[in-house]
Length: 125
Image (cartoon, rainbow, N blue to C red; front, side):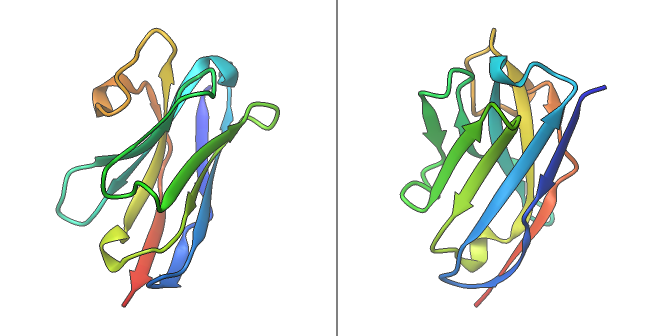
């Protein structure tokens, strides 16, 4: 059974930082591309960042470029999202997701096979 478990969310002031983690089990982690999405209340789930299964390529939404960094540790089956210079508009539930290496669309939700339950990030002004 595949499980993705996010952690690291919380309440932070604007300008602060958080690091989210997503621990994966039940899959061959190294051959899955990993993505982070966020969903604000009343809005659709949106792409934040992704890292290719080989680990050499990363992709970001324009709104987070230069502020967020995605990374992975295949030895720990974990993907991270370092979030700096946080803004109130970053407030949302953040989800990690896993995509088989056969795919190469990192932005589309439908390209991801497995999802975590999410972790809340709240940025106060």
